[in-house]
Image 1 (cartoon, rainbow, N blue to C red):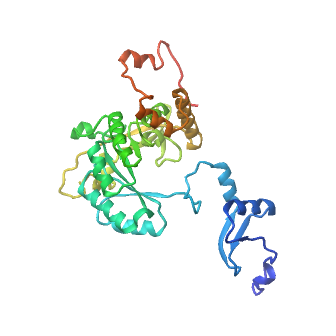
Image 2: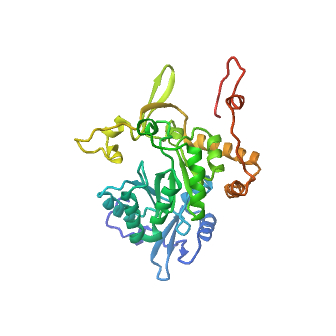
Image 3: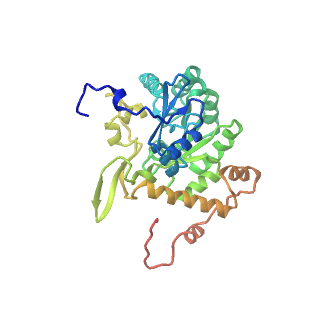
Length: 346
């Protein structure tokens, strides 16, 4: 357009294809397909623009059918992690203003007066508009304290991450399978789901965590080697690696994580509860996660259950059971009796 004095009414089309305010998302998508337009304006009775649908939204729905979305607006769910420090109250307000759906309270010890009071504050001010995930905890009593405070979900695990040394340095923590089983049993009574956080290194361990009562898993080290994870790749002995550090490591503390361990004062002696290391390159999550999901599906299929809900029912009615394995049994269950072999994920 060379003549900048021309009016928009002389340039823009007046033959508009629009959707009405009352039309559903599926109806709007149908109009887009039939009209073969890239955008669909949604207008009210006064023909005022109130929303906009895009063909790209259709493509994303097709390509990512399992994406987590808000039920009414169909927008992607958004979560954020904050600590229990006073300045995090301001961060929370800013996050809520931007439409955050879920808040994860990031703490190595979730059963503290700081977190309990903070959860109470959030629930008093925002109610059910904001979902709150508390933790980390490992015992039933710790779970009950946070559930009474109002959390909607719990993170379970202490000192079991691949880069965590809390159990070694502080002698505090619990075996992850034991922690997940007992906390899930308690939280289930109150309708609160739990997240198994730590110790996950394969799809088989995800299946075990789900079988013990977890609703989902956190996978730090498992995804740390993916392209989308932060950090730069480097080569060592011909192997492509990516740096990975624990939040309790000295290196992370120097970057600001010391607040998480109450060691942000200059006079406080810093005690590392983690290490820095490296993980092997695993490519893109677009290839890796489908492999992991398929492995979990095969596990559930072999167990004879159709869903995680059915798996949990089996856990509590006794049809899903565990056995202790000897060292010999564990060796039999892995690759053995070969002089050499190549282990590829996919």
